[in-house]
Length: 225
Image 1 (cartoon, one colour):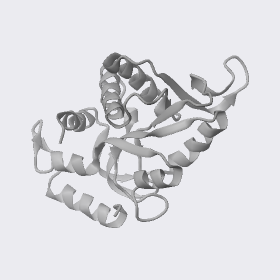
Image 2 (cartoon, rainbow, N blue to C red):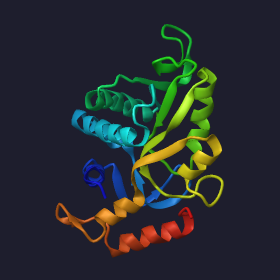
Image 3 (cartoon, rainbow, N blue to C red):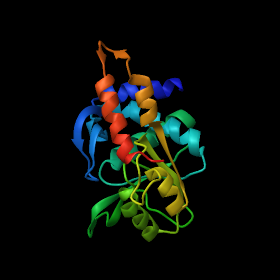
């Protein structure tokens, strides 16, 4: 596993973004782990987060895009932090764009924050995590309603490697089949388990045998084939 991926896994743990226990997800699934990008709250955390996203985007999409779109609400700081990091790391100015939950009818009118979208814009969507693919069902029509954009792909921080809304394939694989664009993650849950299982980190074993068994049982039920 690449060094930056190992560092990112530890960064999620240190930031209390990735937790292990018992959680009920938005999809209704009961999960032994939970990832919440809303826990990145400091300037130093957001700077590092943007850099990890920028590296993953560059690795998977190169410079072949113009706009980074972060769906409201968690996608807003993700898109801003990553746009800044991308400029600093790769010297290319990309634009950030996000949506509002409600259309604004005065001042800076419309549904978008940041850059407007125009026909031909190449867009990468940025999110924290995709469990079932439901969020893309909401985001895709918003983008297409604004302009005839070319969606290059989706980037998330963690691939939970679970079944999507439609059945047995993963949410990221389902997104590619359904919408025709790639979907990638900085790290997968398999890589998280590989890095943390039976390994002491800062005086604690985060994934012990009991937690590993709970994760395995979860994937028996919800894991993508």
